Each structure stands twice: as C-alpha cells, then as structure tokens.
Image (cartoon, rainbow, N blue to C red; front, side, top):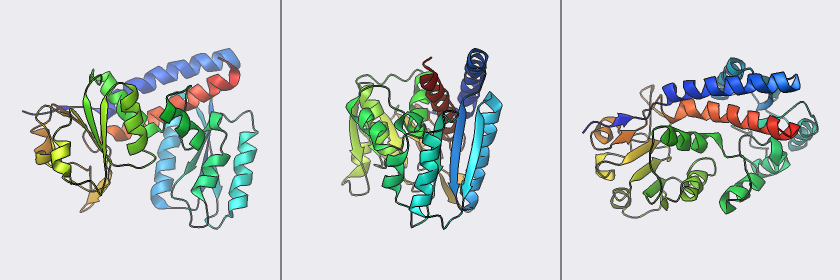
Length: 285
C-alpha cells in the first residue's frame, strides 16, 4: 500500500482563490479590505520569516496586513497597551501575537487582553472555552483548523471514526481533539506520559501527530488503512521533517500529510479565513 497524499499546497491554493474572491466582494460592499494586525516582539529569525509569509499570504488575497514591531525588552504593560489600542481601532479586524514571547511577557495575560472578536489566532481563553463547549462561533487556532479542512476536502469520514491525537498543546492537540469530537469522532488523547503508546495509536482510524519529535511515529504505530495527519515541524541535519517516519508510515496508511507541504500551508489560509470572518462580524455581514 502507498498512501494517498493529503496535499496542503494544492488545497491551500484552491482555498486562497476562494478567499480572494470573497475578500473582493467584501471590499466592493464596504469600501475597505479586511485588516490583520501582527504584533512581533524582538527579531527572532524564524518568527520574522513566518511574519513575512503571513504578509505575502495577506497580499495575495487582498487582506491588509500591518506588522507592529516591539523591542524584545518591551514590558508587559507596554504590550497590553498596544493590544488595547488595536482592540479599540475599528479599522483592525484581526490581531495575532507572534511567538516566541520574551521571558518577561505573561502569555495568559496577553491572550486574555485580546478582544475575542479579533482573536483570529484562537489564543483567547474565551474562544477556547466556546470551542470546548461547542457553543457559538469561536475562532479556532488556524493549525488544527487547517488539518480539519484538509481532511474535509479529501472526503475523510470522521463520524464514528476512532481518532487518536498524540500531543496535548493548547494550539494543536487540545483544539484538534475538540474539533474531531464535534464531528462525531471518538477521540483518545495521548501525550508524553501515555503508556503503551504504539498499541493505542494502532487502534486509530485517524492518527494525529502533534508532539514535536522528529520521525517518532513509525509504521508500528499505524493501523493499515489509517489516515495520518502530521503537524510536526522538525529538522534533522537541516532537512524539515514531521513527527512521522514518512516512508514507513506511508507504506501502511491510506492517507498521509507530507512534511513539508501538508498541514503547514493550510495554517496561513485558515488565518486568512478567520480574518475575513472577523471583518464580516465587525460589519454585520
């Protein structure tokens, strides 16, 4: 068996075209574009590169993107003052705080200060709580949202499926488990303290890998015919790889996301979609 690729590059390009058309309609109706504010603290090289990709993605669909650069030694009060200013600016529809954060910054206080209606990164505990309770229309973190959309576009049936999520972070594992549950999957969450992990993983119809350990998940973790969604971003000898040992897992699985080119490209388009949705809510459309 050779697994079918869940191709995030092709899928994200299609979604970008859809979003660009919707943004154009929004601009024609309101006379302005959806706007995203990106707050970056310091000059971390990887963060700067990622922010650059966000800017290019926004430009490609007609979304306005403004980067607010703060020094690495900014105080907590200084950061919160900027967030409150952006909260009160009606021309700003979405706000994200780019990680990593300096040691003096409290991530919980920062997330709590972002207006939940502008929290397009899904960082606010308000949106997390709504997602947990399956209430309203919370903004979902773009990375797990992208994984869900990728499976949807490839026709993966989640209803009644057993999904095993390896990883419990607040930005991928936990929200992904809730999204799967809301689509009527039966969800098992695993983590670094889970006993007999390979045996549990082999029960999965949908295996989600979000642990940040290069090539840890090998073929003996995978039930033949499973769908494998790999959120890992790791580097071995300078080469990007996921949490799965791709070659061995692809020989067993029915579908798999490649790294790079799987869930990664989907993250930015989900951020764009959230920003458009925030603008629609702000204008009552």
